[in-house]
Image (cartoon, rainbow, N blue to C red):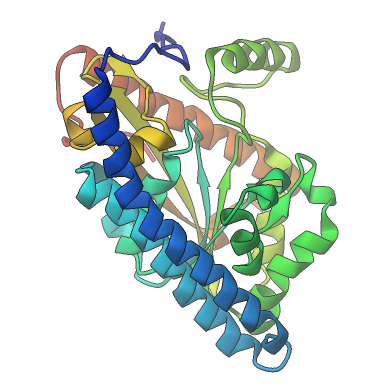
Length: 328
């Protein structure tokens, strides 16, 4: 039986003297304040574009996408360059440059977006990422307004009922064929052991299969996205993304917090970062809602098999930059 052992969500930080804490605080401030200033300027520019979007919708979408890319690229550079996070990427060579797609992923921590952005940048689609995000994020200073103005769908937990928000996001894609990576964490919440236990009980009671190291995916949102976007010819694929972490080459699925990703140098001395992607042609997916739900469930079982193999490699002291074989 596969082990479902993970680190607790909260661990006591290692002892650090005051001068060291001060240096880290100053360093992270120097890194993040320019980015926050850039984000504020971006919010102002995006706000200025809103009245023009009814007159020049395509130009405004392209311009807002370019502004968004500068923001995401900025925080990505803090993570990968300034703080030396090395991301192991698997499967990206199968992604056609510039392809519009629905992107689904497991969800471990806030830092997950760095891995998906790495894929998007390699595929030339960083500017076109539109993330399903919780409505509460619109109240986050700097970030919230920018997310809405960039065209991010801000939805409730029952987001299939958020018809106006869905129409706002999908209309330009469907009617004007805007390029898009529509990104969703299909589990709708971050993984914790308590949620895993609750999910196991629910799956057992409802006869559902559950992948190792995962929560059960929410199928309604996935089905709604597929059925909407398969009607336009330029959205041609579903990308199934698997995210994995390890801390100190020992603790599986223990990622850094967002605060750590912007404050700690030499992140790769402490953490492994791994992202794998499988591409599936949208035309090959089942047509009915029931079959799509089963398809997603099957992908999560296979995703769990991949994660379990990564855990075993970690346990055996092996690297993650070797192929992790999986029957697709």
